[in-house]
Image: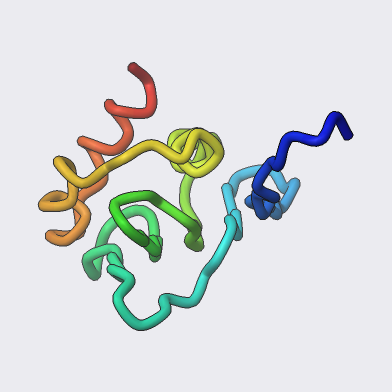
Length: 104
């Protein structure tokens, strides 16, 4: 409006199922593109998830788990922070480092 160019940032949409006993969320981009990293839960975990990381940032994912367990991922998605140093854990199917990072 004032003549200064401002890049148009694409909003990261979060869709959440409102249901007792389950946390189901679809966040941002759920399909990885060429060059993206696609992390998935290990078989047998209490939650199922798939995360899409582009240039070190979480750009989307799907999450299904116990109530309240997806909050950390929603926070990381909305903040657009660099999670590059933490990639080893999600690559191995673990999310503890991402959860702790989101709480900090």
